Image 1 (cartoon, protein in one colour):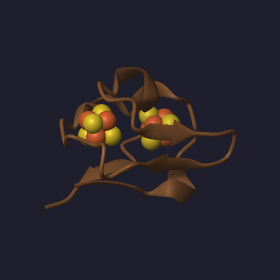
Image 2 (cartoon, protein in one colour; image 1 turned 135 degrees about the horizontal axis):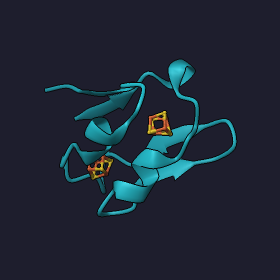
Image 3 (cartoon, helix red, strand yellow; image 1 turned 90 degrees about the vertical axis):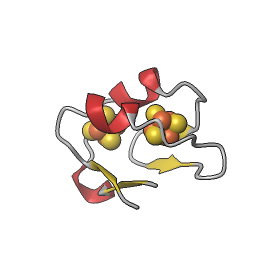
Image 4 (cartoon, rainbow, N blue to C red; image 1 turned 45 degrees about the vertical axis):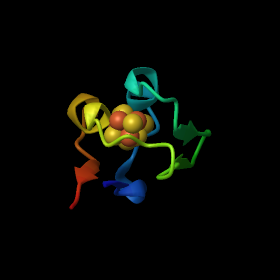
Length: 57
Ligand code: SF4
Ligand code: SF4
């Protein structure tokens, strides 16, 4: 499962552009992942420039 350290996210949107199932919801100052839709591909964690997306088992 992928989790966000939300208070460290700068809402750059990079993760949204790579998510193949479009399950990351980003607003001006909030971000959320739909864990039901997420397929755990981890692309968002690899693309995040400040490493605030963490892969957890
Ligand atoms: S790529 Fe990282 S910093 Fe950018 S919006 Fe996604 S979680 Fe936040
Ligand atoms: S792990 Fe993959 S499917 Fe899940 S939110 Fe990240 S990019 Fe999207």
